[in-house]
Length: 182
Image (cartoon, rainbow, N blue to C red):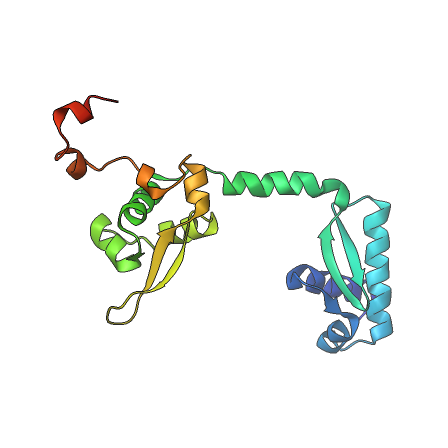
């Protein structure tokens, strides 16, 4: 393998790993000398520094990792926050409401209420930190149950679940004067 190809393979490995990796591990994986791998890493780092690339190579003893150049950290943080703060779809809102009012609940309960597969909505809500696993239910198969989180409360400006608005069924039982107070 030539110097340029070694450098490209090392770059691909560093990019793919997502965590620090030793030069020895890279060398073993690609069948090259450790010195050649270190030279490739040094050349990549120099190229990134020369053009002030958005990435840099961090060295931690004899382990290396691709990382965001500190100059651009705030931009990356904002981009990640934007992804996290995207509005919820109607399906996600329905799923979140089912969990909030009935927690802890299993995915099958959610799907039974909604009448459609809710895997995507549950995954989306988990990734945003609005719901979390609440353990396993004492039902056949011991399904995972879900509950809302503090992030859910903060996002909707509540201190506790008691502040959830009443459901239609609950308002049917309220005296007329309580309904008119709002």
